[in-house]
Length: 605
Image (cartoon, rainbow, N blue to C red; front, side, top):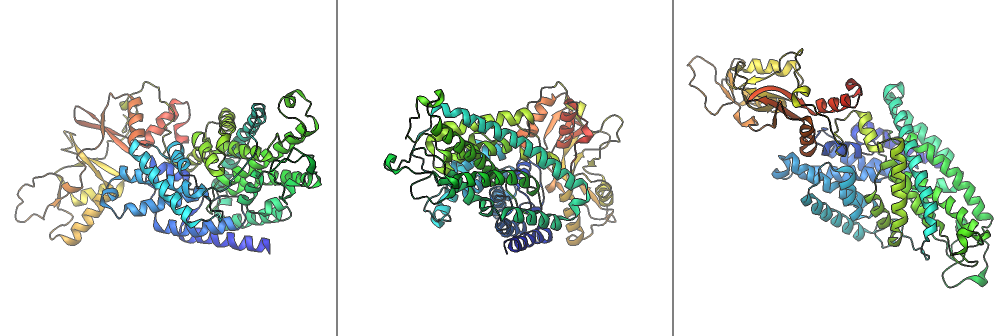
């Protein structure tokens, strides 16, 4: 029955995604990052995506697949933010202001997912947002506060707390324990780098082979394998959140878990504190089961992330780290119990004392693995201590997060979200990298010397049919408007979509607009002869202040402008004359060329 229910839930989820909202699959964070950098993915933040992702997220998590709900909840929150933006003209017509709302929505999403409002704001700042001014900071803080307040009033965890995995460790950590914590950081970095490479290789295979044509079959096969492997082991059969909660738990006198089946000596018990004790048969059984669970989680998550169901990565990554941490914690605990006379234990761990807390090791391991995969640092530490309430364990968390980032960065520079952005071919300019080459705008702009002339529209002598022919024969998103073909003096920029809509509406609603009507982008329309068709005035859709740079502008400044303003294109002029255009894709290709990569290898899907 366990396998049948899992298959039913996952089948329903993948059919809903495939049939109604293809954008509802995956995590959503790579796409949110791309949208916040100024690229538009139409329909990605629409109402259908919101409805289907909300329903299918519940089904996907219920099916027992190795995935989390946190990434998708950021996408869901951004969908809500985008839909609310359409209700207000101020945000509907201003792309920059809408991006500020989406940054705040991302913070609210993490706040709801983890019950970590400050961590949510820092996550939006460090990982998601492209441009994060001070006013967006406090707006994000307010959004996260309201989200956390609403979550607390609903009390979804049933423990009257905002935090997901509340911990209460009785003993402080010792300085010498930083060594195993750093070891966990190294493990987290190695696992993060291994996971990113393996997952990207699998996703690339899915894109380039026949495997990608059968998303429903793929989801069913992975669900069946997960369910069959998970059912015999109680630690993989339970939900991942329950597993992490149990691994974080510090063993008390009344705990009935296998992880707490130690050989008790009640004579040495002082109050609530239980001394380090010899592991009983239950602990050894639990260790074997956890080791098998670790191997299964490590490999099954590679194939699960990126399937056609909503799938987050936070909880599976934390589970891998928490299992590894608990295993190491119990090993160190037993080492301290049997060899308390060793030099490393003699100073601070006397017989009958409670020295080692395995739950703390699980917590540090979870942070290390999550850091290795996402490359987060500040926001990760804050999320972890908000998540657990373990404020005095900031230093171990910081040590593990930094170590995992250094180790993972030494193997591969990209986090999982940046790797998926590159795999999907989104035009995303990495804001953290410096551009230090001495090239100029004229070296990058199009058209080049061998290319045909730039497609332009003149302001007062083109007919409707001429403009329709230009729109029909090209796929550009907009066109520069010049005074005349001979002077090439720039007037403004008009978007393709606005042109198409305006001409269609004019043909339907205005009398006398035909194919031979002259289009005017000027304030003044000269008098027409009685026999000539009515002119079409399109001054209102013309952007009179398009972003321009001169041909001598250093590319370092141009790249900075594209990053900071989230531009899609910028026009190149010389003494007011239009010379060419630079798009974000041209900038990305130029950066690849400067890094000695093949510029044509950058795919834009």
